[in-house]
Length: 110
Length: 110
DNA sequence: TTATTATATTGCAATATTACGATTAATAAA
DNA sequence: TTTATTAATCGTAATATTGCAATATAATAA
Image (cartoon, rainbow over all chains, first blue to last red; front, side, top):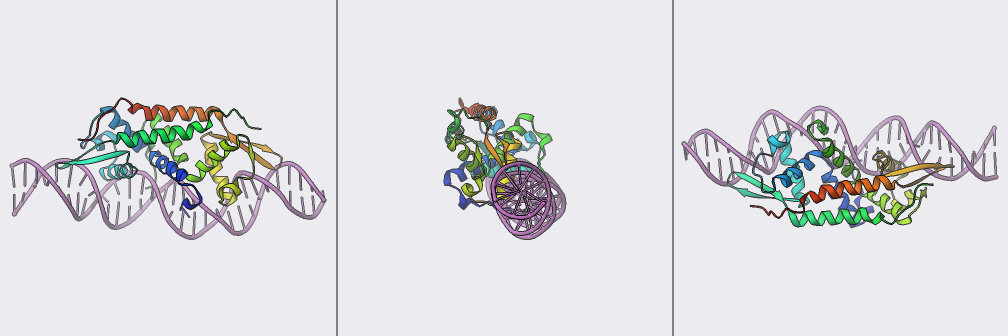
């Protein structure tokens, strides 16, 4: 089918899965890391940096914008992208609380 | 194309993306949360718990096993699944270090 | 106005994912 | 041995994702 049955799961489960899915492509990880590395807005050079075609980068940026982890502001003919710090922190907390559910669990398999 | 160009990215980027991709489905999040919640091995009732067909659950379990976050041991006619604690901790660290690259970044967009 | 530049959108081909019915394999129980 | 029981695998349909060429859009420069 190819269609995820989201109605079977909680909002929290769908939410974390949706964000993880967007993080589930190396180009999008590379874009985020580049934005962090330069520690400022970037206007334009992502295509050269990542090495995929312009429409492909544009599509990845769109998905990152969809979950709000980056934001883009029009600056003349170009668009400046940067990390949305507030959303980044939210996602950090979301993943940390998911992954730390398991801290006091010492069970190994039967 | 549908084919990710992994050769354009670093091993670290591909690694985190691969794990995030597996976490990018609510059924797999639900499976992991159920395994954590019961805090022991589970032999069989995942199909009832999650509410998807048995072959579908089996396929999701396979993907979780692929990245090593869970392990399965044959126990008679059934299979007991549990969290692989060591791998879980590795993934927790991996995500934390990725997400914390951004801590001292106070930039907002232009 | 007419380029030029930068990015988004459209359309499409190739491949991947999701889901499930049918079947298979392996063990346990009768 | 025959009959459950449990889970994996196979096959397939529906849908999603990835990537890019071509085109469109929007702002600036000449």
